[in-house]
Image (cartoon, rainbow, N blue to C red; front, side, top):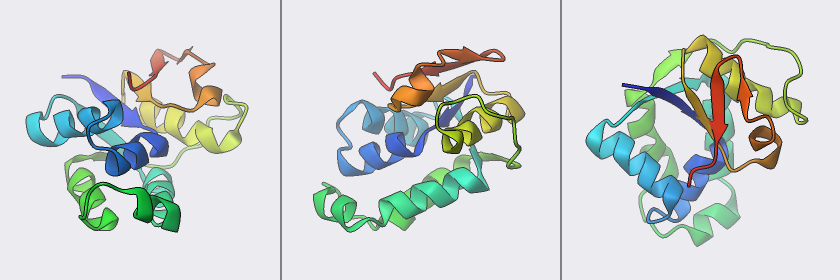
Length: 131
């Protein structure tokens, strides 16, 4: 079974629009255990902060509280420490996803972020779009 790190934008998109590609990815994780997800504290903090934005809460198609929704994912995740890997992405805040993937021996980082997608691959970790 492969491992993956999902970017905050994937979680937020899955929460807002569960029928879209990010929602389908999260559904495969929750319902089918199709892959193992890797998280770090830094990723969890970013996701919870993003899920709490009023714009996100207003546009969500689900009525489940976002922190409860994300809790199901946290329970299934393998946690790794927040490690520094140096500047890999144009946006230094994105490096935590690559660092978590390396630490957690994940094959993929799934993201819609152009700064991450431009990297394509780093130390054996492929950065792919949710589609």
